[in-house]
Length: 258
Ligand code: PEP
Image 1: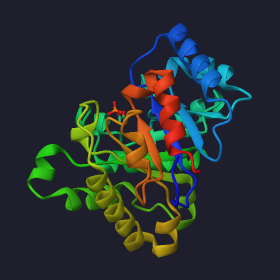
Image 2: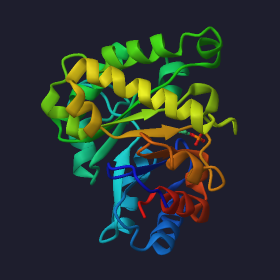
Image 3: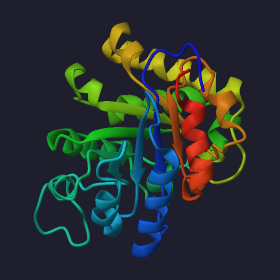
């Protein structure tokens, strides 16, 4: 339970390329059962594409919302293997992640690509988690702020101020994702403060203060309470721990306001 942070916390469970169909159904059922009424917090599950519809049926009527891990920037056409915004809406998605570090670094997505995907999400009325974060080398070289500023500025190119209430930023230092090597509460707080200052430069202080910024990177039930208690941390994007229902629910509890 957190105290004092004013924005409604949001916790996302990014299942990445895990769960076959029946595993996804089991996992979603278990989370629904354990979570009950999570209080004043948003909780979004991000299963793999083939499991979206089945998970949507499981979470129907619960407090959970459905999101996709990615989308393509066009709405339809000759783009073999891609999945579009209208397809995601049609299977119940209300959210999508763009710019996840695994897509930026393993699949070579630039911020220009992320920007096109962000526009596609907004055009299709999908609320969007825009992920940004520096690599270990960039942090060690003292370049964290430059990298975050560039990723935010380029990814948000031509995104209007009006659209910002449909965007959540996820600060996810690449070196903390899937490594067990979490940012300290202080590192996370500083980075969030910096991200908010960039949003203020781009959109003004009111919008910066109203935009939720999640932390992501090896969040667990053991470290969630300390991270979520930091000023300016408005929830978590959770990978590995979101595959363990009991742990994921404990993270949600840690993020919920008192
Ligand atoms: C993520 O997938 O966004 C993530 C933060 O993963 P993990 O929690 O496993 O580090």
